[in-house]
Image 1 (cartoon, rainbow, N blue to C red):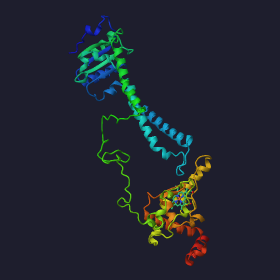
Image 2: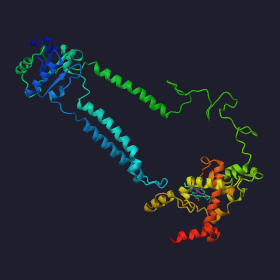
Image 3: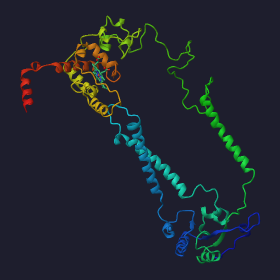
Image 4: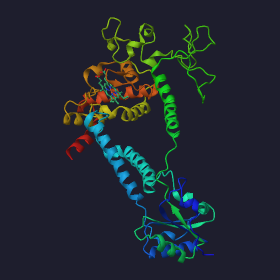
Length: 450
Ligand code: HEC
């Protein structure tokens, strides 16, 4: 069984007939345990440049061969750190150095806010590190393996167990190594030859490669060109996905109507269902009899008249009575909604010292030239006190100057509740101790003394 086979002529010579150099020996073994034993003996004999090939993982063979743990985890760890540091540096540079911007008084640089990007970049870099590191450590891609030139070796993927010792091993010797392998009782030992150096790439290869390269660039050039040239015809769609659906979108063409518009203009004198906001006092804070005269555009923040002058909101026909029944429940609701939506800027007392304002002012003071944060108007200041409830309602709905509107977030009735609570804040903000009922007054005094 264990007879060595001499190298065959076809392996010894290449087509030029020149003697090729020896690259190593490959020994085939009958089963995994024989391979494992041979591997142990090869290692004991002092060989370093050898490897085992089997169709499936052979348990324990790594230890026998003296294979150390892969260095890949360290590469991945280094990549993860690089990713994390890159992310933190990027966020520091953009948010805290290059373009400082006050957003709700948040700090320019804050590790908790940076965590998601840092985590993601660490994961991304580690993924690249593990893939590229694996390829590099395995010396891949490898287009050619001389072991594949040995016919019996092809069994390595089905039922062959091979051990190869390379000629570059310092202990390798043409005859001694072959004898050593034979002493391990293999099925056979085959010499593996270096490919002849004179082997040349076939001449036709270059022009073909050049053609493939050039034609490969054509789609990219076409795409690049299409991106910068205006088209009059619809684009070619290879995959339609859900691009075409039998429904109309805003600003789209439709041949259903004579004017070709998919979006229908409002028909004069009609209203959409549920859009009858007849009660202008409730919905807009405007006196119903005079509401028709009001240009609604003028109710928006920073509105200008046709002649370019700014609109005076004070002169609008605002209602002066809250148009919903006022009771304690509404007041409680108003306080709750105010504390949720308004107190962040205006402060719980309406003084203008909300938490966002405090932080933003601190940031602004510490970083001259950064930001233009505006202090919210004290809600009990004289001009605001003088405003009618309708105007306060309008301020909540649409906003005013630099303050954003909250109409889309706060339902109409809740806006009136807030208006009611604003009035209460204004009373408390300008009241004196005489306004407090006698029994509570004593309690307050007692508390103040403590
Ligand atoms: C994001 C911060 C912020 C929030 C939240 C906010 N405001 Fe304001 N508010 C301001 C600022 C800033 C001004 C001053 C605007 C200006 O003068 O340009 C202002 C002004 C006002 C004024 C005075 C309007 C005038 O005519 O002078 C009223 C009234 C007011 N806010 C009510 C409210 C109410 C009620 C809420 C809650 C629904 C609220 N604000 C929520 C920032 C805020």
